[in-house]
Length: 160
Image (cartoon, rainbow, N blue to C red):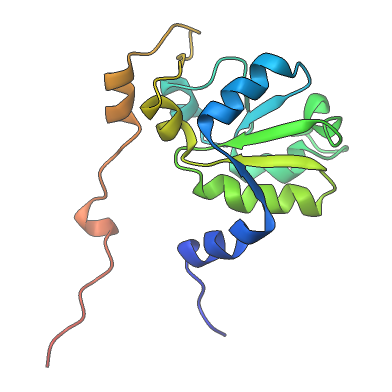
């Protein structure tokens, strides 16, 4: 069995989904009261800075959150199958895969926000913290760009 990388999974999902840029999402949320923005990052990431009014549904429970009969079920999400739904993560990669999954589950108007919350912040659109207070753009940029540690890098091939 061949190994597929995360980057390959994202690349395979992209042609099958619809993406929106942050400014498109901002315009859409101002004109469409039915729009549901779903942040699929982890709770700690969401607390640092998120789009005001977005719904936190971590990626690990997304599928059970949008279906009836689970302890993770979120009725507003289950009932959004015919509403526009924008998925948000840090960079837009996790949401590409999640958007494909929700399409397979019958969501009709699901979008992945290209560039994620990092892009939202780069375009100087407002983020709020866990207390619903505005987040400083420069501070958010730092928080949204954690370093990749040496132990997280692929091992270098040995030379013979």
